[in-house]
Amino acid sequence: MTDSDMRVVMKGDKSWNDLAVTNRTALVLAASAALLALLASVLGLTVAGIYGADSGTAHMLRGFDLVTAAVAVPILGGALWEAGHGSLRGGLLTAGVLGYLVYTYAYYIFGTGFNDLFLIHTATFSVSLFALITSLASFDRQALRDQLRQRTPVRTIAILLALLGVSLGALWVFWAVSAVLTDALPPGSSLVETDSVVHLGMALDLAVLVPTYLTAAVLLWRRTAWGVTLAAIALVSGVFHQVTYMMALVFQTAAGVPGSIPFDPAEPLILALYVVAAVLLLAGIRRTKRKDS
Image (cartoon, rainbow, N blue to C red; front, top):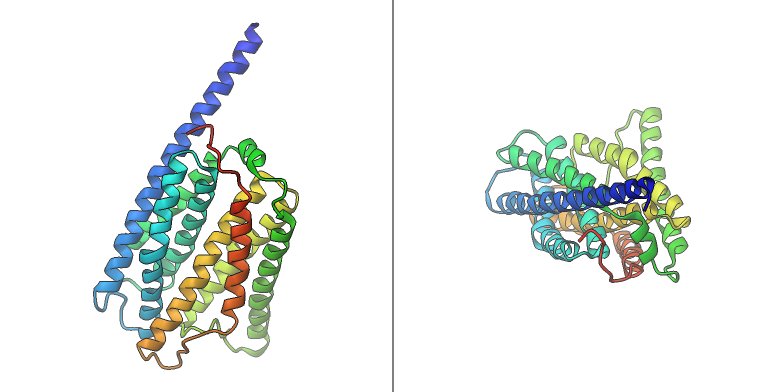
């Protein structure tokens, strides 16, 4: 073996070691995010008056808390177990739930006033964000391409992602332009929301979700590893977004919040699109181990 060959081997070993360290760091951060989210949501559900005086916002956040504690955290725990044993599918599911936590806890820290859970919410948001970043850095792109089954309907999934992204973007652009022309504030969703919550939701969706959906759609259409990764995050987090939205409607109605409604008739179809696309994508990843496990 020549000196040049030796340098290539040593460089490859170092890259592998870096990937393994990044993966372990991502797992630790994700586990920490799960524990923080569980603590925050349990306290939000059990401590009276923790979210302040605005009844609509308080019960919206309690709806979020229930989904986080009862669904998101257990699924994240299972995904972490799989990812820790080398499953790429588990890693993608982990990243998707982390994406949900980042988006959701942005509402807690940017969309409401100061409350007793501020530090816990901020820690949950921050740890989830950096867990997501390190998770993205830990994926072996070549392995992800190799483990994507040829029969996976990536273009069908890409079309669904594009449809969801364009629909969401068009909705908020329409209301934003309408607000400029009429001086009437955008109505937001079917939830009873303050103007600041509506503004935050529009900003997050237009600045983060819509570009993620459309970028994922383009890259997934071309069967790239980044396309698979971004699509998994968009779709898995999207499933949770829809479930929390529906639960928040129920919580507001049960609490008698003025103007609340128990059900949005468009939601079953929207949720079904997310679920079908997410299942098709994750099922298209072979159940083999990551090389860095």
